[in-house]
Length: 226
Image (cartoon, rainbow, N blue to C red; front, side, top):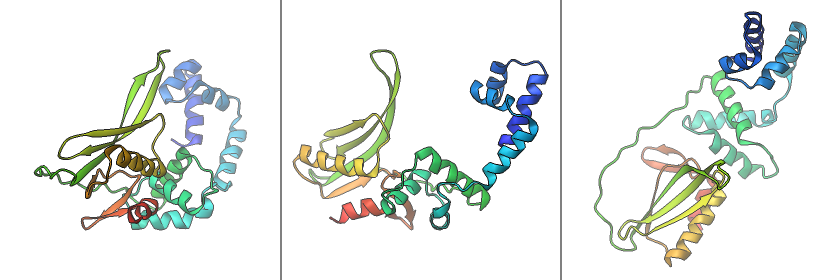
C-alpha cells in the first residue's frame, strides 16, 4: 500500500466510526502514523506524496552499480548490497533498512525477481582429526534480567572429527568484519587452522553460487587469500 492509498484508507475508516487505535491495528501501522495522516488535508497530502517522488534518494548516485549487481546476481540480498557498497565507499553512512527498501524498489521497478537456489544435502564420512571444520550462523531470542527481549546472533565453528565447538555471540547482526575476526579467535582457541573449512552459504561471505563454485564477497575473498 502506497502513502496515498494509506491516507485514503485512514480517512475512510475514521468516517466509518473506527477509533484511531483500531484504524492503526487494521492497517498494521502505528497510531502516530494515523495521527500524522489525519493532520493533512487531501491537497497537502497530495503535494507531500509528489515531493517524495521527485526527491533524490541517498542511494540514487549508486543506482546503476546496484542494478548491475542485482542483474548479475539475482539471488543477492540487501545485506550483501550494503556490504559491497561499504567496501567501496567507506564514508557512506547508510542503514540496513534504507538499503533493503531501495533494493526492494529496484527489484519491483526493473522486474528483477530474487532467486532462491536449491541446496543439495548428502551425508559424508567423518574427516580425520584436523582435516575439516564446519562454520554456521544463527540467532536466538533471550530475556534480560529486567525481562526485556533481546535478539542474539552467533557464529559457530565445529571440528568435524571431535565435534569441539567454538561460538561467538553478538547482540547485533554480524558484519563481514565480525566474521573474519571470529575466525581468528577460533583458530587461536583451537591452536591451529584445519585444512578444509565448510561454510553454510551465509550472505556475509557468499554472494551466489555459480555452477557449484561459491562467489565470495570481495572482503572475505581477500581474507581467504591472505
